[in-house]
Image (spheres, rainbow, N blue to C red):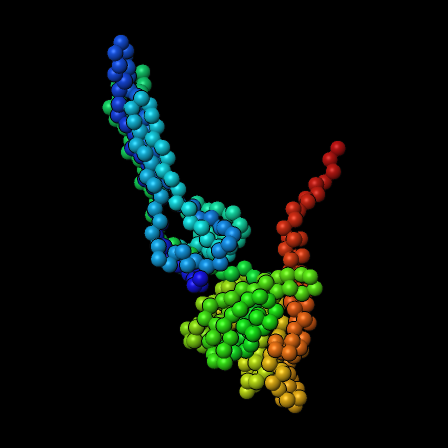
Length: 348
């Protein structure tokens, strides 16, 4: 399945049905009177978060969604049926933005969460509604109200516990393949990863979700390379694993390049907990390994993990560090979600 994390669609709710002008005319019924029914309500456009989806590919070839119009009212006081709703099913982590791509309309982060994007128009009143003691034979009825139409953007931000960042060929996909059942494309050329990948990682009988995004290069925030479009997928991560290629010319400079792009992007990424790792250490000589570790330590201002996905050196240690940070973040969220008890002053 092709990965798609952004789509522009047009939606329109249904118009309300018109009310009817009708009079009861039956044999032996002397005073029938008005009996025109009301029109049905137009259908809504609803967006729903469902399980089992991880892409917006369903909106690649269909961009127009319209709810049904309400049925018109009829005689014998028959009210028209309501129009059927148009339900858009999206994966967890989908954001709904206005046409300006800045105004946030809805943020769907839980399964079964539903938001009404456009309400259908109300049905019109039939002439029976306008009957009064002074107007016993009204010959008027209301048309149904028109539905609402709008153009919106759907933007998917994958929900993962940990995110992998780094320059191209830093070993992110190799690490994800080594610790999970995910099978991302791995090759010896830059930009092998063209779209984010998700993997379920297990350590010490525990599991968490890890996201691997395409690599960043200098000037990514200006659109160089693949840009920073995919950085939105790690905005929701509780911790970042920053992999720096040990075979690069200068590990410290490589680290600073990625951090500069994160700062230029914003979104609070520079403030997230970060674990720094020097990858591909199995390809380094002892002297070069020591030198690169020292360079990276000076740049990151913390001791990096010497990591090798092929020989699995320090892989388990890194996963345990990630899990510790994730547990801390989850505990903090649980405390914040608990209802606060307000103590009131004692009163006689």
